[in-house]
Image 1 (spheres, rainbow, N blue to C red):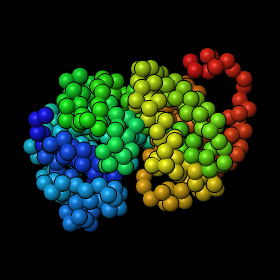
Image 2: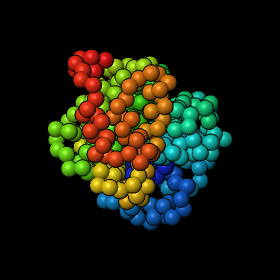
Image 3: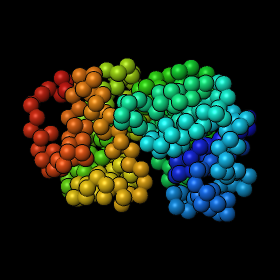
Image 4: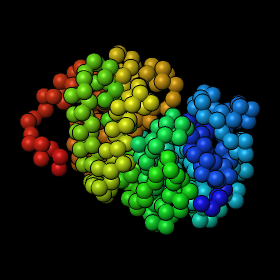
Length: 336
């Protein structure tokens, strides 16, 4: 594998885990954070003790608060900030981005007020860049331990997806390619909303039957909206759809599921987010999903009930009754 220069923008758990992976792949990695205390901690310990404890970063990794340094003469830029901060970060990156620079976004979400996917948002802010995405069932905690993980690199041009695949692929991190960028992003964003629902069910004390139903009906909702918007059905039933949904609904690594559990136990949305102490991206994507459903005339009953609980003071127990009491249907009719 050829050594590449990679700048990672965002030193949270996912950015740090990917820095660890790419360094182990033999690449020269520069990890950027806007927070001076975070970079000082990384420089002194070569470990993110708050977000990814136990993952030791190599001595040759560069840590910086200088955005220009993190972006100059890089073969690839990895944008790894939480979705609510993507637009602001992209605005700051624009002046340091050369024409044709490949930027791969690794966050998941939909912007609430514009209903844009993150790649659309980045393209708007940095029009000279080529914007791609890396997504799939991939908790940072496991990638930081070198546990087997599989993702999909998505780009409009297959050659760009293959370039990302070459840089990230390893014997513990298998990467597939796709040109369905929209489908990949919608799967990654909407599964977080369904994971909130799965967590709420857990918090209410429901069992595996309810979890299986939410996952299955959830992927049906994601596919229905995604296909209406132009995504490919195969994407929603692949790693970045079904695969990502399963891991996010089932794992305690999932901040969305953890927040949902707390809401099911009676916490408010804000109390749950404060307790999780990380960005709960499903909260930010839920309203956008509901607005998109209206725009494309698609029914999303689970996501509607999540929005009711999050933003309208709805009761979790009542939401379950509403979902269970919906008009009877054939399953084949329901999955269309």
